[in-house]
Amino acid sequence: MAYEYNILLGRIIKVSGFGGAVTIKIEKFFTDNIPEMGSVFLEVEGKPVPFLISGIEYSGADLLKLVFEGYASNDKVIEFIGSRVFLTSGSYKNDPVEDSQNLIGYKVVVQEGRLLGSISALIPNQGQLLINVRSAEKKDILIPFHEHFIVSVDKKQKVIIMKIPEGLTEIN
Image (cartoon, rainbow, N blue to C red; front, side, top):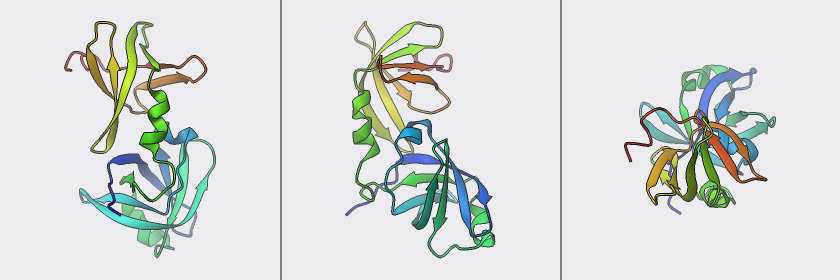
């Protein structure tokens, strides 16, 4: 099975405890959707390096604790602080990109209350998931689906409120 490392899970923010566990601040998309994982890729010196997971703990917030196989001490994992963590497609049952297909049709509203459009597609891009928003004028707008841009998600009303940096919608 070929592995891809283009789905960003989050970033290692600190070492946790004394057994070599690391704490990952996960992307907002995964706070309600932690996939089953047997391995991940860490970005080490700009290159993806695979790591097997020997322990996982999720508290339900935006923090996830992982222990890597063969890295049972803090001395071994302290160098990974700040590293981005990517999912290995094929290593878990529910592909987050497929799971996120239920976002298609959600309305995207910018924080000022203006309707930007509806999500027509999700596009995995290197290290970042993009949403394709189709405006009322039938214009396609690509927006990174990133926690810093998401203000709130109303699953019942199928609305995502986003704070998009100025000029981002004009470059599409």
